[in-house]
Amino acid sequence: MKSVGILGVGQAGGNIAEIASSLGFQTALINTNKRDGIVNTRVEKKYFVPGYNGAGQNRSLGLQAVQEHHREMIDFVTSSFKNLKLLLVAFSTDGGTGSGMSPLLIDLLIDQLPGIKVGAIAIIPERNVLAGNRINTSECIEELSKIEAISSVFLVDNDQMRKMKPQSSKHEIYLSANHQTMEAICHLLKTTKKSSIYGNFDETDLMNILGTRGVTIISSTAITDAKTTADVSAKVQISWANSIFCPVESQGVIRAGLIYEGPENISKLINVPSIYERVGEPLQLFEGTYISETDPTITTILAGLPFPTRRLLSLEQSLEKNKERLKNLVKKEHTQKYESTVSWASDLKVKKTERQSVSISSKLTKYKK
Ligand SMILES: Nc1nc2c(ncn2[C@@H]2O[C@H](COP(=O)(O)OP(=O)(O)OP(=O)(O)O)[C@@H](O)[C@H]2O)c(=O)[nH]1
Ligand SMILES: [Mg+2]
Image (cartoon, rainbow, N blue to C red; front, side, top):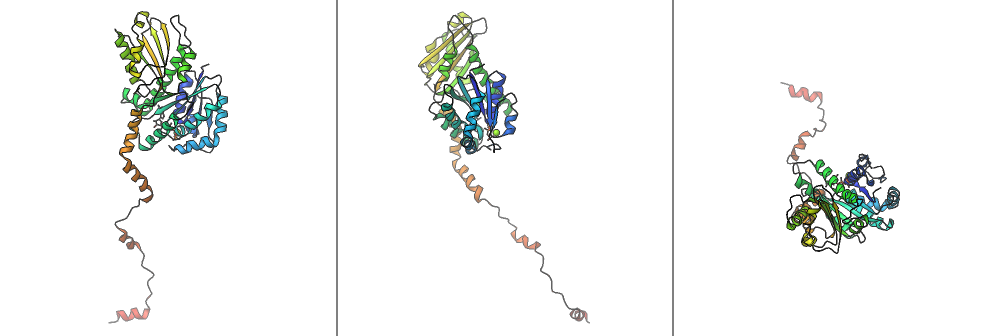
């Protein structure tokens, strides 16, 4: 049984848990909306918050659900997972349920699950989402970044998938993003089960890295055509910009992993200082070398990175730019009314009041010649 569990919160979280189930992870989901959660049929353990019917992109409702039902949620999580080393809570940052619930829930679980590290898989929406979603993401990321004892935060960037598949539907983008994320984590776990005489990357190494507070990315690249050390380093660095996670923007990786799989002669081209030059030398590096005749591949994990300010600013800037217009929109909700230009016409429909009946004698008089 895998030592990493996935708890999906909200619809996107449930979808990630669904894929995680198919890859053999222990999974469970929480939602405020039964109809969303019920479609994730591979996730057996489900908790639907009583008295709710979705959060309608309102983070306060998600938060309120945890405030009211945290006991049941903690019991549900405790009874859903066995022998975990790491629990990753998966959710989108721009909806209501997952975004509103997850930061507080993670903070509570950190204390309530002794001996288990708790991290996050948080989805960052595409650049073209609307103001309401952007506000949710900013609030959620700020709360997440302030949780003191949190482990790795994976920022799944839907925009990265859009870059790779510009013509895809939303649904395809979501599905591929979910797959790539879970496959990256699954690949690491599988590697820890392999043995090598050249240097093992074991589960303790992995947990050391994933237990690091801050943003974590995983990326893999084939180095089949690499001829020099510089080629290898460049390929790895490019993979940090092209993974499913928000691209690395600045220095400051704390713990890192480097796994090589492939023929022995190509492994000689790996030069650790040159690979990590761009992100700064980490405090600790855990390496694994697995010699085989497969295509040479390097997988790297960078943990403890700062939150990607530039990427997040790209979401916030359009709010800033439209500040007055957005404020006016909200004001207008309460003040707007329609003034008809033909209000005079209403008179046309007013029925004349009962006419006074005229006496027979006066009508006779009127016709008299
Ligand atoms: N990568 C990925 N993103 C998703 C997926 N589903 C939704 N999203 C993202 O999540 C946002 C919608 O959030 P949901 O997860 O549906 O929201 P929720 O947590 O259920 O909250 P409410 O529906 O508001 O109660 C979308 O704008 C996308 O950015 C998914 O399966 N994968
Ligand atoms: Mg939903």
